[in-house]
Image (cartoon, rainbow, N blue to C red; front, side, top):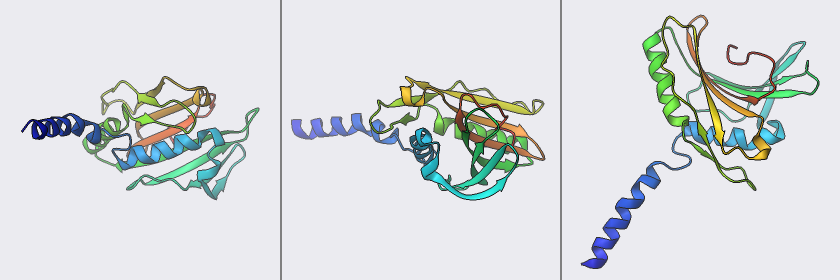
Length: 185
């Protein structure tokens, strides 16, 4: 009887660990892969060239989040050194309430995600939720990296809800030194 009680107790204690796993959603699994390739300037996840401009070139991302409208990697060349960003439009709607719900759901999926880059200590994505307001055209949550290992010291992760011909929810991973507004593509 003691063995059965002990097994039941161990199962009950470990259940939350499985429910909160590092890769509990497809969003966090994709985000893990993107962040892992950040030190390589997204070279391993960069797909075909989509378009080129004077200051930037867009590439299709090989890492996409299921259900996303699009995921792209942008290379900025009009800076002293090339900079890169990964941007994924996760949701689009004319209805603010639907967009607000999606924004909140995605925040919940991302916040407190544990990220592990090989050879580095794990870190947690953490950001304070800000409720969107239909009167404001842009709401952005910036996720900090706690504690940020040296290899990703310049890495930034943002979740943005903005209005531009409809409400869009966009997840962006970029270099801190970026000089262009990536969240409003």
